[in-house]
Image (cartoon, rainbow, N blue to C red; front, side, top):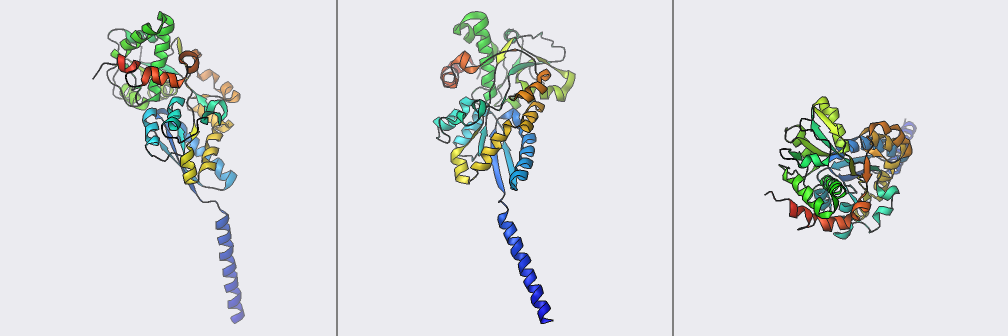
Length: 337
């Protein structure tokens, strides 16, 4: 009996030791915070599920990914003010640059760390109108007509709103000739804006659910989501020219080094370029950057003339100074209180 008891005790100790070794070999769970902009909720909900599965199969590590969404400028300021974002996936590189210039959270060359200037997907700006297009809106210049109510968010807080502003500005500069005419044009356009929401999703709700406005200046992916939800109640109008929107992504270096999450945060962004992720991007109505996904989703996206931010405006630093800084173009033309 004593011998049997000793055997069972030994066996129990061996099992416990084996379990302890297995537990120690299992990577500790990790949590990431992705601070993003308004219309990416659906995209990152789908992408996060795919990445969690991929990372678990590759490393055995459990990952929980938290999402934060709002106007891109507002989200950027939240990171600067101390929210511990492991990754920032905001609406424009100009906002991401502020993480370096205003807080030193990322290096100056952050955009060189991932392919395509750290932009794994693109989008553009289109117009959304109500069933039958009762105001006959076909292009940007129809938005400045008397009696047309336009919904667009605030460029002071929303990255999407900055793309909207710049798309309209460049259209006018090319059609009517020069900066003065473009400034006059956007002044007329914003005179037709009854309310400036803080972010793109807020403006989408104002237009689609609250019934305000004749036209909504929208991210292309947001317009497709509205069409999917509301069907024939809305129509998408593709303007003659628009802007190539290139949202960029980055690890927030000081945060990931503090939290010890650099490896998984880097992998999280790198996986955005994978075949699986590029397919998810296309399904969520963003424009993929891989040739394979572009071919698959080519028929989904309208063909239109696109211009780039560097080509038209000389880059985000110049844009911020000329158009969105205190006292710059937007403040000069937007007179509503």
